[in-house]
Length: 334
Image (cartoon, rainbow, N blue to C red; front, top):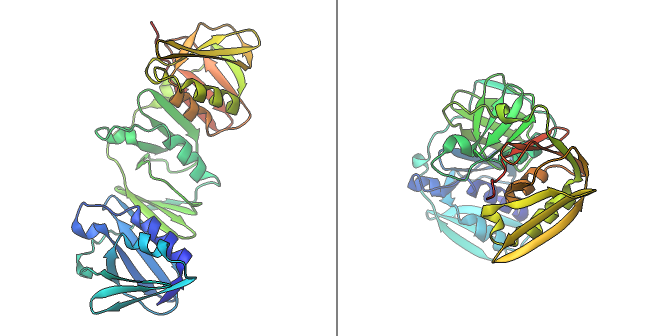
């Protein structure tokens, strides 16, 4: 079988991202040609990635180690040939690799979901990624490592912040691990256990998280407080500079109303920081402090002027513009 090397390298890398060690076989990638197309598949049983690219000739089905992705990427030839000889997968380009193969019968059967389906709106991938930036990093909290999708919203929280985006979709709530979606999604299929994203290049289906997702809409500020209208990039860069003072990550960056803007500051024996950021401030607010990385995540999805709604130093603040709402809990400073 002959295939474009760059296309194969991309397909293998995407499939390899889903491989794992749950079973020995899941450390492999499955390759098979059908009707002039090569299908490359990787799975860890929770996530399955399937990529399809044009190919000439026949191959497989065959299982090869996931590190084949690195070896194909290291070649420089325009195309590569893949054949099975004496129980090995031979990869030939400007150099030759011979890789062990594994019993195809060991490959797990993971059927795509066959329940409901719908077509997401344009820009879904970008909005999903923005919301996913607010999930928890704690392995012991699977519900908070996921994005809830349904009821007209995408939402996520790690208990210290939350993201909420209006998004048409299923009436029921799908709790989806915060996977990376690299391509525009044309269709979403789901059943009780899995959700599948179909793109022009292939499919990804994911085992959903079971449980009841917290109602993060309850912490969205409704009325009252002060509004700071400020350039998102300017404020984000200022928080990034403040973050260079080590104590800022735990004690937060203080924000004060200062005339025609706000002043960010960090004071500690390990270092000090201060910067004035021009902004329009409606209403007075008491000094408030935020974790800089949380505020930068809140500002990242949008550009230009955003609104930062501040209630007080103990209640949630909110960054909002258009479709985007990010609620961030302040840090109480002594």
